[in-house]
Length: 590
Image 1 (cartoon, rainbow, N blue to C red):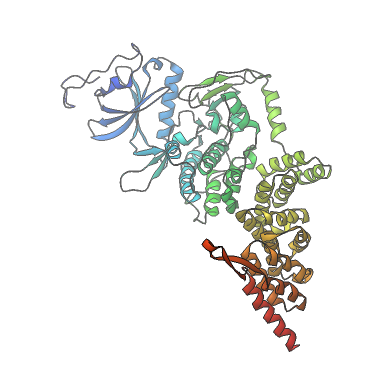
Image 2 (image 1 turned 60 degrees about the vertical axis):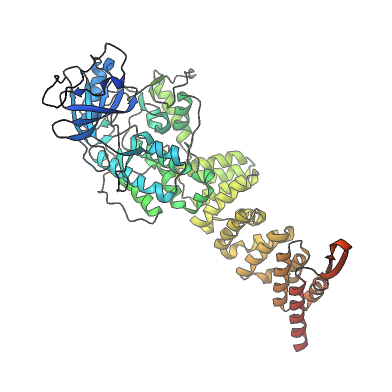
């Protein structure tokens, strides 16, 4: 404690003795901690303490001061975890990791950590404020997160609790935001020869971003952080978390066993960026072996998806050995055991932060996870077999699980689209088949092409997407278009006919019989288009159809008050008359 009237300036307020009363962060305002840090503002509070704005009285430099809750300073385990956070963070020197400058215990008994003072907001606050982010805004942030993690992983440090709250967007006035990764308090340090400070089966982290291997208390390496980045990316782009649950236990089980949904299901417009979707999906793979091996690899895939230059990350090795060490997360925790059956737990306050202790049956739990994670080595034949047997939902599920691990497999995605079409899910089927057309149009089989041809009858946007997918498939789509044509009308018929024309396949249809129904369509623009096209055909058999439209009249009011009307040509009649004259002139020349 600083003495009154010492060299630090005006008389400093006395620090309240720790542990005597419930911790009130405001009680430290105006005090000088350890004779060096004058506390001026309370910035935030958490389950284990509070963060303040303070000035180093000798260096005249503002810092962020993290102070452990006084009643916890008597716990050797918690004090050691707090010390380890300082040790780990201080060992990491990188632009995208918050810099730790000091750690100590004041003569009054307060444990503290001094860090660089940041200005801006956390990614969590940004997402709450703005909602879903555009890829062009999200990916640069993710690239910086990957850069910071790569630096940590190369020093054999795994964060294990990455989430939007621990990703800070430091934005001093007049400068572009710089990402800072915070809170390495539950990080693991790779030391195969050191003592293990985490019990086998103990899981630490935040359920929303917990990797499956963490959820079952298994040993983790840097790929656990890759999974967290994938979930963070999913939330940034979708505006919400991929899983919804009412309890910590339920959320942990979803993270452990359920595949992460496709981002395109939430934001269909993202389907136009298949490489971005594939990179995020791969990072979210349940099996660590199917994720990117390093943060550098994930960064490279994200940059390539956006057409950005490869980020300047150093080459990294494959994931290191399983890591030992680590303690429980800072903040409030809920303890959940995972025997069978699972017990109920109290709903945690606001944000779910858990320490999951697998009390028994770890081998059984691991077997359960393996059973859920393992997709047959040949999922496509299995899904085809199920589809042939009429077990459509099972075929869809097999394909969906396999695509979680192999998002770029065009044939699997085509099968998924076929199953979705059979299940009466045309919007989902269109999304899947559109993606196939972008990945590998040759993977669109006849059934898939039939589904795309049927989608020409959807709303304008959906029909345009289907038409582009069919155009990518090329001449292979002609049979599907010819087959669907007799069942079409209106705009759907016009789209099918225009595609056949673009594919050079109008000789596969009865030209006049196919176009002439549009001459009597209620839509004026369709009548005009059909008249012009029939006029270009040179076919005399179109003359009677065109004459009928050219001669059609409708009564239009002249003086409504006197109920006087006049017969005038209908919309499209002028185009039909011009087409008729063209055909008659061609017939005379012959």
